[in-house]
Amino acid sequence: MEKSDIGLIGLAVMGANLARNISGKGFTTLVFNRTVEKMTRYIEEFGNDHLSGKENIEQFVTSLSSPRKIIIMVKAGDPVDEVIQQLIPLLEKNDTVIDCGNSHYHDTIRRSTELQAHGIHFMGCGVSGGEEGALHGPSLMPGGSVECWELMKPVWESIAAKDFSGAPCVSHIGEDGAGHYVKMVHNGIEYAVMQMIAEAYDLLKKAYGLSPDQVADIFDRYGKGKLESYLFEIAVPVLRRKDDEGDGYLIDVILDKAGQKGTGKWTGRDALDRGVSLSTITESVFARINSSEKNLRSVLSKHFQKSNFKTNVSLEEFSRQLESGLYGGMLSAYTQGFELIKKAAEENSWAINLSEIARIWQGGCIIRAKILQFLTEAYKSSEKENPFLLELKEIQNSINSALPDWRAIVSISIQSGIPTPGLTSALQYIDAMTTERLPANLIQGLRDYFGAHSYERTDKKGTFHTDWI
Ligand code: 6PG
Image (cartoon, rainbow, N blue to C red):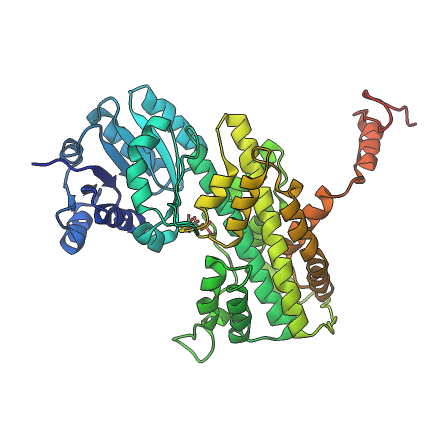
């Protein structure tokens, strides 16, 4: 019997759709699932010449052509290690195991080292795009050796989404944990972008009294302009949806508590460890945490003064300013995310290309957006490798033209008492990074006063301490 090209373990919705995508592109795909009935039902429904399943893992492994390429798509964490432990005794040297889940990159580095000791290759591949993406074209962020990349390249390139120029949204990110690292930061940016979209909705709703449908009309317009993106596109039907169980809009009865699986928190924590400023992503994680305190917020809302500020800016003018502010906010969040990737790449010796990362996020993934085409080109046109975006003329021009509107909407939000931690922190990041003299001199003075921590001077080199008392 002919052996299959690719093996895939884990038939929850992402794995199930990925296997259909791969087999649909002509690669014979063999699937395995811990619960056999799930596999049997899946094959009954979707099985064909290119897509079949095996009931036991030994048969599954021996039915794959060598060197074997096995994709694992199970819940991140222990389940990945359990599957790897089951596979190790069955695999041969030069086989490749590919983890396509949302694994932490530290785990990916550890697993790479462990499998390397057995002569087995390991690839940690970030996959973004949710269920639809897995089926019709995700954005793929594979990390691992160049050898593995070359082996999987034809598969990845044929199943990936396309960027704005029609090229596949996949690129070799770098060694070991690089792919999962970049996927983690992608998710962090996803948090920031969603937070700013939610803030825009809140401002339009509370400062202007708009209905969900009216906000959707404005977002629909945004989604056709410079804010063109998947998240703005899907915000429109989410806002317009009527509640099947009542008269009003579904959005009005969805509880305002945001969930999180942890990748945003990982990103924030990693930024703190590396000393990279990532305020907008981190604020977005905190905003979700604040939202989860629903009961406490309900009680406290009765004890604090409400703002009675009413803006006299027309809705037309405000929605124009908001579009501009959101654009600035997105540029700021991307800048922070890319800087984090750059620092991690330096510290882990990953040969990362930021222009390529912006390019493969143009399609398929949750943060896909027109702005990423702009960023791809900006990175590409720079003479410096992986420059700081704020140093590039085109980014400076875009941010400068957004700034007045951005300040206007943030100040309306502050005066109205409508929390906008995403838009505000994004602006504060720009303000801080473009201020020549910050008040850190006073912080240094205080530190030296109470703890003799020393300070540097503006007029001569060296470290100084003053006897303050
Ligand atoms: C993607 C998504 C995906 C998932 C997030 C949700 O790129 O396809 O990011 O990975 O939807 O993990 O994360 P939260 O539950 O933390 O919002």
